[in-house]
Length: 372
Image (cartoon, rainbow, N blue to C red; front, side, top):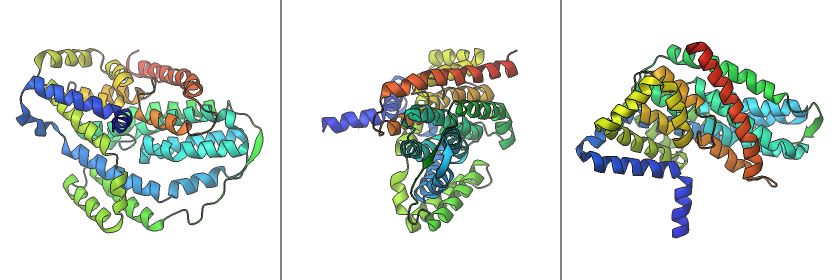
């Protein structure tokens, strides 16, 4: 029993912290009646529906089928590295950084192993992680904090895109340059074809649900209608997907909604956070992300600023840095460790310097565009 509790605490550390913060804030505020009003149901519903649709697309085998086809055959190490890194970069824009890494880090381990390039695994996986975090930041559905900020501040798609496009372009250039560190040596990548790899009915069903989710994000379809359509569709055609949704993330959002709502009614703390966000909103968001991860940082700080632009850039760039700055980084590390001959140390020796280098470049671009 104790071992199960410890395993749960390790696996849901951010949720546990969020729950404690919410509970303590309720006790200090002393007003339970206001708690339900702090939770933004629209954000929770959108996250649930998009996660369900993405989980269905992932289970359909479509992304894996495309990826295996791209790396199969005789290629140079540089080409394989570039392909394995660009897959999560672009896929994360639609299916989130977490799902992109879950899908493609395992493929990287397999491809490099069969080609005899296992020594490049840490480098490629770290690049995949950076690519997924930076690629996912340029769309509202690329990661949870983007969806939250896009919805909370009722942004237009154009405003959102133009705020992050320069950083996405720089990320693409830097990631491409980093891939040049791989050699031009060629080898066969004999990845076998999977029998009946793509479940077409799932592609159609969840592709449709995902499209409806995008329409809801863009405020074309009411979120109340979306949740009814998604739940009924899953009950009728794919009940298994209910078990694939990350309910821990939904609960984490709910807890931080409660926490930030209660903080807003504590004058001293609210004043302190407002002063930080008024003086250095981007830097505050970036630093907070290093310690509590960028999703909770976005939810916590959004209530204390109207400067969505700096908040958005801060939490998105804040996904670089420490391993906990983005939960997607921890997912990549966990999958990496499944491969023989790997260790946390070998991963971190590559992860830390590369993340700091990319973060420095992104902050320099921010300073060039908005400070100097």
